[in-house]
Length: 113
Image (cartoon, rainbow, N blue to C red; front, side, top):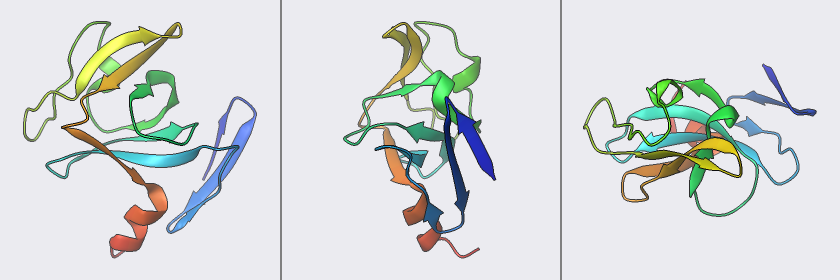
């Protein structure tokens, strides 16, 4: 699978993440364990916001939300954050108590495929 995002092309397979610049493909997971979406995080550091246009695969309701709405986890109903404009891009400003980032390669090394 190859995903082209703004002239960055990277491929992933179970256990492999090919970095593009400083970024990587990551899973965004609720603290209850539910996988919310797959996200391309373009910089290193803690998860503060998720740009909606960098969500690769949406398994929740984040892409369907409007500005200033608050998406909730479908499983535990905890608030994930708030949809806001950040640098003129729609983004989920995450609640760090509810949402965590799991690098794709670490996820696949823990899961039995």
